[in-house]
Amino acid sequence: MVKWRMRRRRAACSGGGSTGGRSVRMKIKRLQKLIPGGKLMQPDRLFLRTADYILHLRLQLNLLQALSKIYQPSI
Image 1 (cartoon, rainbow, N blue to C red):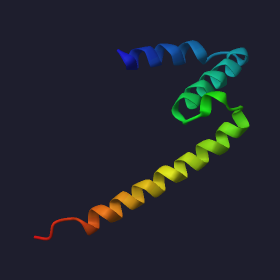
Image 2 (image 1 turned 90 degrees about the vertical axis):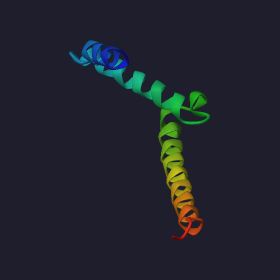
Image 3 (image 1 turned 180 degrees about the horizontal axis):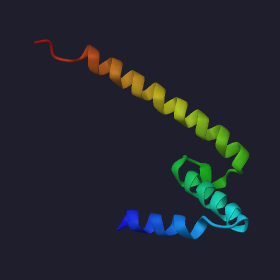
Image 4 (image 1 turned 180 degrees about the vertical axis):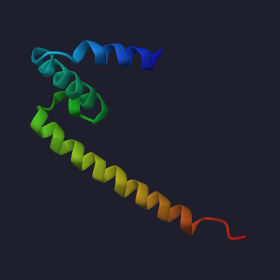
């Protein structure tokens, strides 16, 4: 059901040049929902915050992987 809605939404947004701005605004709003504190940010600050957030998540992942290797039971 969700995939169908996404396809319909994409089909409605792709077309002429006038809908391009609307498509970008929708993507920015979606990104604002994903990034903590993003709802209050302007797009330029949001992109910087997104890059920082991705870096933070990667560091967290590396730390958890290292910890899992340390505490992995030896057979």
